[in-house]
Length: 157
Figure 1 (tube, rainbow, N blue to C red):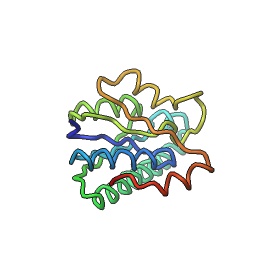
Figure 2 (figure 1 turned 135 degrees about the vertical axis):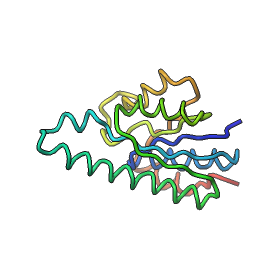
Figure 3 (figure 1 turned 120 degrees about the vertical axis):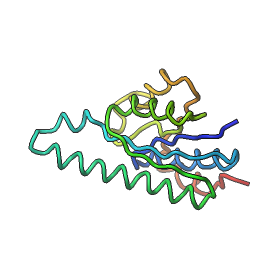
């Protein structure tokens, strides 16, 4: 049913829980994992010109760190994994990447680095849910009191 799972990550806490859930899904279906991080070109262009190169480099490094973390977890779970870091509009890039690798599902946290600027879903998650032609698994970030209980529950049998 699921042969290819795209995990969109920015390394945030919300993304971390989504990674765990997506890796559980991939493990259950013996699916290939594609870990993707997108450097938001809008963030870079909104920065003063003299800082843009440094910001782009820092965001790219953070994206590399995020997909490397997913790669390590996927390898430990016994999943095949492919990693990519792209630059552009996050929702557009995630949708394009999912098309390119013919993914069966896209997984992501409901909030990313930008926090709670949208009421229920972050803007990228909302755009994916609205425009993706495949299932989108959105995983909400837990409150502080829920984190400890969540970490105690094993994801696989």
